[in-house]
Image (tube, rainbow over all chains, first blue to last red; front, side, top):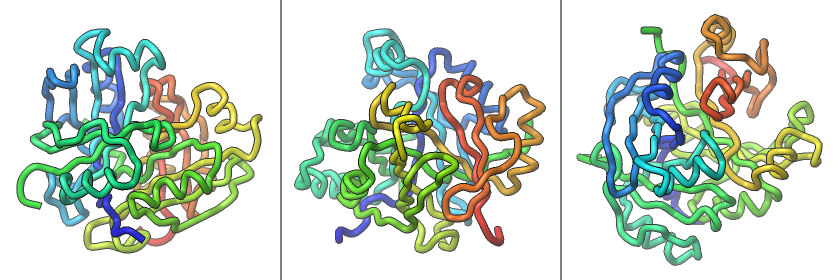
Length: 150
Length: 150
């Protein structure tokens, strides 16, 4: 049995056509935006809405999770193509890892294809990498190592 | 601003054709099955795989999250129809709530349609209710009140 690589569910990524509409929808649940960024590399404008916890990375209840709302910067982007093909909805799931480089090295030896051989820049300063959904039952899966001290 | 209704990401629900294959896949990440049940009402055989934490509901790092793997009991079930329409992949997201009856009462007044007016039986003795994806940007959304003392 491997040591668990995944320390928590970091976020669920949700594709939407209009970010402000989606943010308003989640305000119904009392969820608030803690980060709003454009990620040109991934072709998205995105909002992170905190679920639980009392502050990013600091809570007696553990690290919070996030709803990550993703609006494509254009139709010819991964999220733009996802919307054209499947419509709005769940896009991916992100799991927290303590050491993303070590996690990628471990997974690389198991036959799970890595969409990112090396970590990239993700939301809120995190280091991230995506794994191929075809090797994970159709689920686009992201590893997330949060920024700053663990 | 409403008080946050959602206390954490409880689980991601993943539709699969074969439960044992899916369980094996997540063993790659070191995730282990903590509950295996048949839910006739929902037409699924399901496994809960714990992510993080040191035990169900008890951890200095907060409550764990779960990957919930769902195999349909037949083609004419919600998950069976989902597989026929969309293939394997992310099916829904479940959020923890402290008081599911109060959460349903609050949401019922906001225009979000409730698929379950009253809580039903979910995994591991939890009380659950689903919200309509059409009102939530295409995301089938579940509320989960864990069994036992909070």
